[in-house]
Image 1 (cartoon, rainbow, N blue to C red):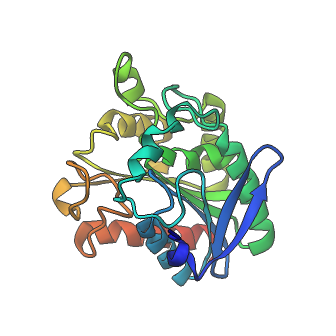
Image 2: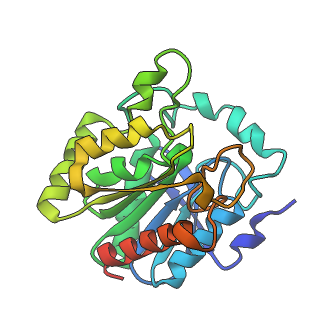
Length: 266
């Protein structure tokens, strides 16, 4: 069954950085924003968020890193994406503390291409859940000027060493140092979003980011009651499945889109 009808308004191309090739969907005009999908893939509610970014005057790039593009997150086969090898694929680091995934190199290359084609002050990037920390690690690419971490869930805070992982994030010390330097020298900043009751995004992780980045880290921490009910016991997907269309949840989405507009010059 074809699921990509939800992406019918997008152009599709394959992007090869010399190491990996992945499909990318593109829509809109103006400066670029890379929307990096969450688990289990580029599902329709991620596309809905991307549509809203494009409507605000930016060019959206939607890379497909895993899963089936357009397939609903609640599809029974989606669990196979989460359990079927993602955790051991060499492109991703699931358990390592203070270390980014190799796939971030591919995303940096995509950001360079997007900026060269779309112009503006730079590129925005948002990671979600499994990819939540990617946008901060991408800051070693000068084109990236507006990183957003939505429910950053890596490394998994489970099993032996979970306390250490809870206070860690999938960004290397060198990448963190680069981000700090750029925040100070270029007047940049980063937004992080989470639901307070979400066990996949421990409070210790945001406390670490607050200590490391100070007032350059804008933490948006929502009450669980602000969420739209979703498929999980606790609300998790701030900008997608658990986004309520009013109240603090909607305000968080609007803040992210405004952040992209301000930083990219849209």
